[in-house]
Length: 107
Image 1 (tube, rainbow, N blue to C red):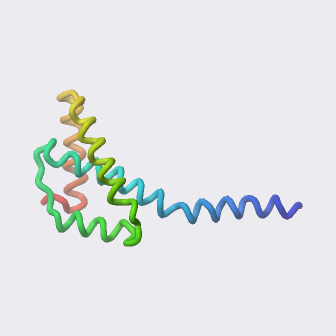
Image 2 (image 1 turned 180 degrees about the vertical axis):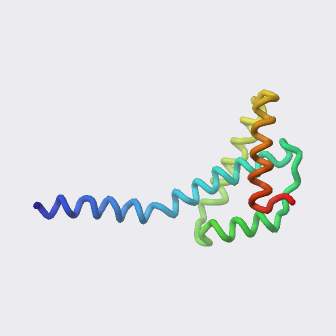
Image 3 (image 1 turned 30 degrees about the horizontal axis):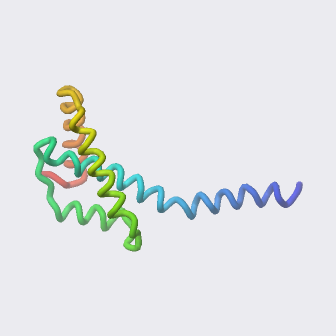
């Protein structure tokens, strides 16, 4: 077996592992941005301390890109909300309420 055949998968794995924190942080920004954008839209009031605790737990302290990506995702989701039908809004807000409650953002 050639050394390059063994080395290539190892390099791919190392690259994927080293890139994982960025992907996770990006996913958190998308998901949290969706929930935050829905606060007024769904008539909810979130506990700011619980949002801070969620970020503290899930986002690396040195992730300088998270705040701007979260802001971008939140504003993008707000724009999409304006185009929702009443049925889509009902479904969206039902799940947003469940997610917010499950994460302690509402009581």
